[in-house]
Length: 393
Ligand code: SF4
Image 1 (spheres, rainbow, N blue to C red):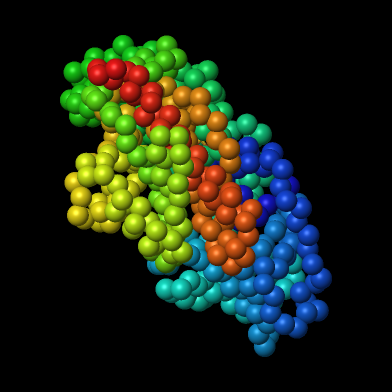
Image 2 (cartoon, rainbow, N blue to C red; image 1 turned 120 degrees about the horizontal axis):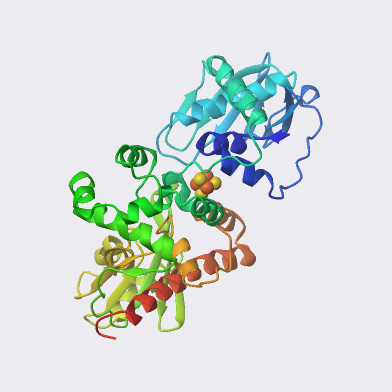
């Protein structure tokens, strides 16, 4: 078995995710010349160690040769140090030692902080235990449902698995804790939940949640979308989606869909053009977005006009119950038949942007735009679905 730090993270979050992602094709990892014989700093070296038959891969951002060994450097985008970096630092140092290299120190740094990890050795027993558990895990572990599922690539596979068992973990908002409470009430399966006493559930979980739990169970059992009540009028408008660069706490791409026409503005390079575009819009224009901070951002930029911003996600949640585990745009739009043209996720788009800023490569820009255009078109798909059920349609 070959393991890198991402595997370890996946495993801790959800062993099933670790197993499923292991089956995907991985880029070929090559271990360059032995660091022991190199006397200078190296960026992104690949080091391989061994533990209990596991091939461990470490690929830190930088290693610096110091007097008696190597300093490992991990670079982060975050503004603040996160506790989880300590385990990551210890993992890399552990692999280095397993490869026979002497570790002088490990440092985690970003533009805003720098932390030398003095006590990484204390975390090695934890890493060893996790690795041993990874070896012992069955090929097909159960889903470990939580907020982390929202953007997981295996969400639909897990939905299928949980549906076979009629598990209430399918219902959005039911995690292990809520499941325990429901179990104590004798509610174990989707059938139990769909037949539960609504008044009792509303008393325990609140009016909105109690009702939604029952409706969601029915939506799964009947494999259909349930409308709570028809949405109101949703007139034509502009769909907007903004991409954000957390390292510098600023936006980098604004995408708009007007009718069928997609327009975009790269925020740094085309800031003036974006302002002109917003200025040219009619008074009373309506914008739609899916969740996120678009409302606040657009309102801040258009001060001298009366505009309306509507969150498609909130309207959808108020009026419909879908047989899906997550109401992320990706899952909902896919349920409605939208075909995504890229498999990029929110983290990958940031790396892509950084890459594009360095290289100005046209192909990378195309990928970024495709990702953003997919988001606005998918939002429109959801909007059109709601319009078709509107009391005004
Ligand atoms: S969807 Fe959730 S339970 Fe399924 S593999 Fe992903 S993280 Fe695990």
